[in-house]
Length: 246
Length: 246
Image (spheres, each protein chain N blue to C red):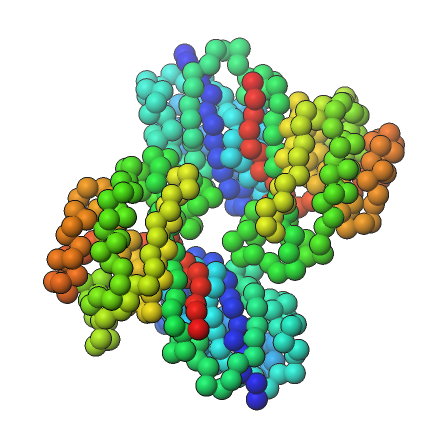
């Protein structure tokens, strides 16, 4: 039985997140993909994803893996799957992998992008894909703050309370801020992300950019391991899972 | 009573178009803007728009004009209006104009952009803003076809049947095709557009790009003045009113 790795893009707006939630929260991306796979192959397939994105979070490079007995040729998988997926989810690529491959545990790093629209006026076309901050942000001090977060740290202060994980040490391998017109893109590549970590980093950088927090406070915040010291959790619709590396 | 000119952006997805339609077609952009103005000023304001965009068509630079007795300072108009508009419509700028100004009749030219996503795979983020054409398009021959359309012509062959206008002569002042990655942007600047003209031009260029119509056929199609000779009307969601010049 072949094991497949499929790259997905989706707009998270209408989903309760990757994982299934009680019905009142709307469909999950996972449930929708599994339903499409059932339609395509007739099999009850359980898929594993690299990143369990939250409600409203988007993906350009989510990776899923699953086993299937289907005889569909590899190169026809993306189009075949797209034909049974709703318009806000798309398969981009399929590869055959070994049974030892696991979309989440085999990943070396993931890159998330957080997008801020920094403009006094809103943008109707970016409203689903960015956090609108009206007050001008000071990018230079945000970059200083970001530099303190690079590398290996205990990120407990940047993890939502109640997370069941025990080890809060993660390594940010690369992190960049880039301004293009009114948009500010924050790209963070790490070996793993704690619950809400990318969004708490974005929320903290915005506090710094607004002058409500000093860039030099970041090392103390990290050392405190206290979620209450970091900034607010930025809204989900500015976040997008860009890439997963293996 | 001051006359105002306001620049609007909107996502047309959820509207029946600029003009009000019988209720079952959903709200119009015009009706929604007039309701917002009533909320803001208390006045029953009738607005005039430069381009009466169809259902599903977007705008980045729609221009409206209206008279108001409101004492709101000019520079506060965009934010004040945005506060009462839904998230898919935004006011970008306001200017005071003379009573002789008419958003439609005073316009010298309008620029529409038609966006084609030319890729075997769909793009979930562009699905509301582009026409998805899977087969590779030959841009060179599309550019040749476009060149024949520039200048002053009788565009009756590029006007939807049943239009009440009598004069079908329009001047395309500038027209460009630009490919950026999988996206092809067709920008057309003209002194005026007939009903569905931009979308019929886009549909005809796609026929040419797919090899189903020769670029050299364009002069004959123009001369025929026969809507049946031009290509199909491209879908509305790829179209956007970019700019109006006075």
